[in-house]
Image (cartoon, rainbow, N blue to C red; front, side, top):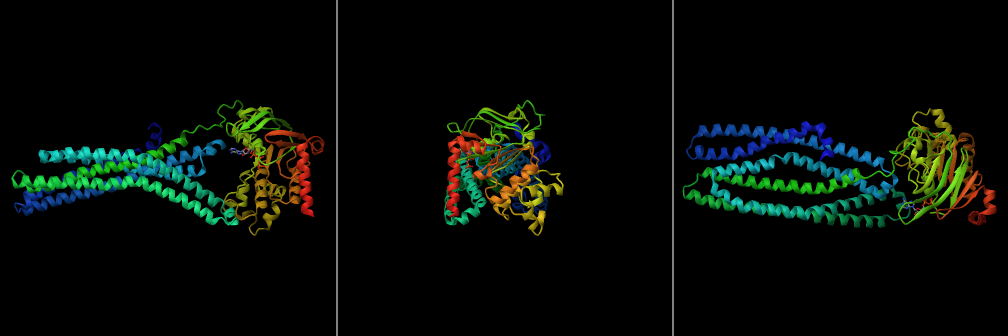
Length: 577
Ligand SMILES: Nc1ncnc2c1ncn2[C@@H]1O[C@H](COP(=O)(O)OP(=O)(O)OP(=O)(O)O)[C@@H](O)[C@H]1O
């Protein structure tokens, strides 16, 4: 509860006013039946019109006060619960932003989306319901019981049977419902993940004409969610008629027993009317409480899932960094006996040793899955090495502040992503304060200026979501330009020119010689031609370094390199023929 206090404290006024204003409804509901019985007993039965009018006016005034209180309570409960969930959502989103890649791998993106939206919505609903019902339901229950008891003790004894039965029914419903709600939320997760994947990859789906397959997959998850939801709702659905049944049986019992009392002259007619209303109110309040508990049971499942996100230990922080103020000045990179694995029994990098001197270009080549991306990801600490040390300028990367480290390391990821907005806005991600001259210069260096200028709106061209309205090669060049604007001390290009033609790629490499003269450059490539002129080429084979040296050296000493070289030459010849 302590952790949620900070979401309540700023809106304490609304959190207090909502249930307090609801008390007007409680008082009204308790008073009105009594006044009704007084009208019947002292007005209708003795034909006293003035009394009826007087009491009628009082009842109307009470009803108006109830309406005002009800509106106020609804307003403040909405304000309190919406504010609560907005702030909670903000914190969960902040936490997700702090997540390391490994943390993100552990949750699926779809699940995080559900937690941020649907789960928090459930919590909001229950906060609102609780604020409205926390005084109302118990107030009506206790108030109704007292009034009914004061009117007729014998009749109240009927409730001694009904209330325990209802409480047992409610308890059973809650025990059955909670796990079903948990299952339902997981199914919503799965649906969200599926929708997200299908929408993000809609182009691939269309190009493979897999729409019907995706639809079937979606329908299966959708059906599964339907079954899960119905399974949970069944409990809610059966609870209502059951309670109504109990209420009607009780009313009939009261009318029958009370009728006999009237016939025997032991009770005035008006009292039976009021008594019946009180009984209905008592049972209604129990039903309201059961609704609150049911909603709360669903929200508890959601709260548990939100808590999981908030409680996730960020496994990659700079909390214990010993040189937080250190800045990268030269860009020397050293790997000392580095081992790395994503999962316990799968060694992806096996005792990697090499040094990249400032300004050098390091090519990394190897079969797919050989660990190239994993290797470079350790430099800006997207993941942490398991064993050994990754050093930049002689300092372990874990000792830098993450901010300083990542500001100095520019990485163009294999999966390039642009954001909606103009080209200029996207490029400014690299440096918000860059002037247009600088932006053009870096775009020229990434061989992007040409095609940007050919667009009608140039740098003001709006990019579709994820950069959907530029070609793959253009997108790659924009991503390179964006990173160049960072003026990184270390630049990593992870297969980021794969969609660019070889001539343009060569121009980009050539321009690096002037724009990035002092920057240490890591270039992961599939084509040997892309790394042939590098100062050093690292050949990776199943997570191990199979060779390291210049193109010439590797051609003489490294079998794995020769194999890649000749197989690519053969392919080029075949393509030429
Ligand atoms: N997030 C991850 N979780 C678990 N395993 C992973 C993850 N990313 C990569 N791997 C595994 O680690 C190994 C090395 O992957 P990596 O992406 O580093 O290879 P790569 O040489 O860059 O491949 P490619 O040329 O295809 O990009 C592969 O076996 C891959 O399945």
